[in-house]
Image (cartoon, rainbow, N blue to C red; front, side, top):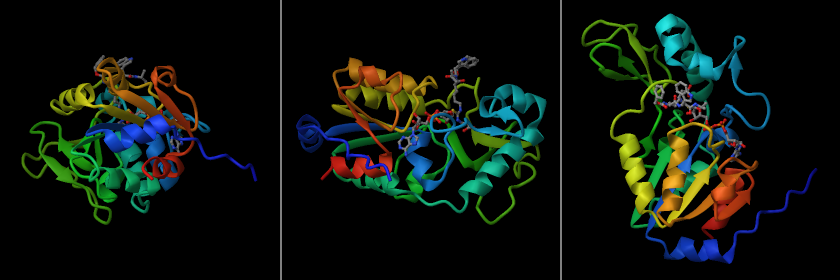
Length: 246
Ligand code: BV8
């Protein structure tokens, strides 16, 4: 059994953790990995389903081409997610929201596990797999674990689509702007479990850094963002995050 030494949390980071009043956290698929949610990249094969890479399945082109196939892909993922629970990383971030006067949690994930762990006011940049949206009137419908999703919009009868931002689609108005504003105001920024490849989300830590924040990355692997960070804690989010706030 490989003995993975615990990452050393610097005295500087601990000092900043106890003295900061404005903290910003960006999470990616890696924060849900220990809950059993497959990541898209990093740590094995990227998510491929029925021979198609996820960037193709989750794209605006695929939506135009074959809405039923997109629903099949999201139904498959939702069924996987239905039985999964938050892990210590989600729980620790839910605890952090009570530690700072201004705490902003921004996620690229669509799994809803931050909210399930108790995080509130989560900024979901890429939407949520537990919601369907009408392609005409944009009416939204919650999809619960134990009920079939509605076949058509209950308001206007047109087709529904996942309320998720697909590749090639603009992010919903408001979320990204609010996230960028908080990133520019924070004193301490954590980047947890993201390959930092998908924009515009990956640009948020760059905004924080440019505004003078101390940036800390938590990831078992290095990313294009690592060089920009003031501290890189190499390890799993569920194991590392609880070490920071003690
Ligand atoms: C946009 C929802 C303006 C769907 C997602 C060509 C045409 C159009 C656009 C583009 C283009 N070329 C580039 C773009 C921009 C594109 C983009 O950035 N593409 C990338 C791939 C190059 N972005 C967009 O399209 C965005 N919109 O730009 O609009 C526009 C519009 C039209 C034309 C031009 C511009 C929309 C992006 C949103 C897409 N939707 N999700 C779905 O889920 O199916 S993105 C999806 O992938 C996720 O939400 C997430 O954001 C991303 C995956 O990233 P990560 O979360 O980082 O996950 P990943 O698996 O990559 O990494 C996991 C990390 O965790 C790894 O580092 C690993 O080491 C680490 N890890 C593993 N285990 C652990 C761990 N860390 C901690 N603990 C562990 N235990």
